[in-house]
Image (cartoon, rainbow, N blue to C red; front, side):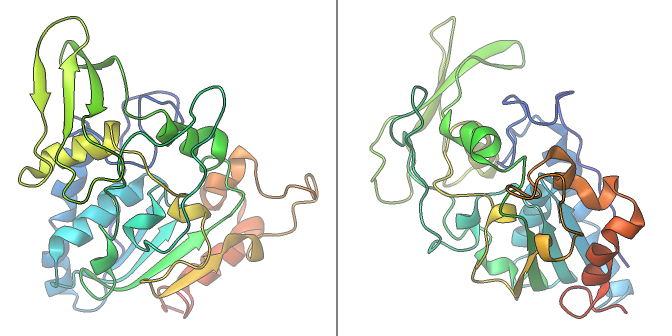
Length: 284
């Protein structure tokens, strides 16, 4: 059985700063409420079809899929989980992936928050999922420097409209603080209201901070090879027909971020055969 979940967004443009690509959306967003609720069905599915539940997450969908598996703990609820073009920080699985440069003049010159993502999903492999597989494209349009990474570099966000109030987010400590980094806050942009987050004891506080305040220190999972603490890394560029239109910078168009859904089968049969093959779902 392959459960299906659609991750709604709060913006018409799929790559807007407002929607917070590849981070944990604020708890008021429908993706968290609906996503985790839908994924609560996994234990029932696994009980009814033991060892036969398979999960595919795409792009931002890997935020809620990854978190649902983390919340499952050591209770395996899916046989295999494939993260395809995952828009989540790679440090959630592997803290040994190098940090990227925070210098992006004239916007950003250095990191502003500590890295709170380390190993957040590391327990998913062998925990909520028997296997975790990363389908990645190092040239992915949505995960490149000018999109997903820049979105991270702009954090903490400012003037965020939520429930009728505009909020500015900040971190009051130092970027090299030791864990648990419980120094995030938000304050009303046009008033005097201040809210101190408790990311240690209140999970929804942590979701909001990950979505709107805490920077990722490295590339997105779906653009990163060689990730550890998972079963396998699959290079999507080896599955697609050659990109003859842009041979010097292949597979970096918007189309390829969702090519498996937008392309014709003759173009994408390599993707689906790999997904169903022994490297992933092993259903052939």
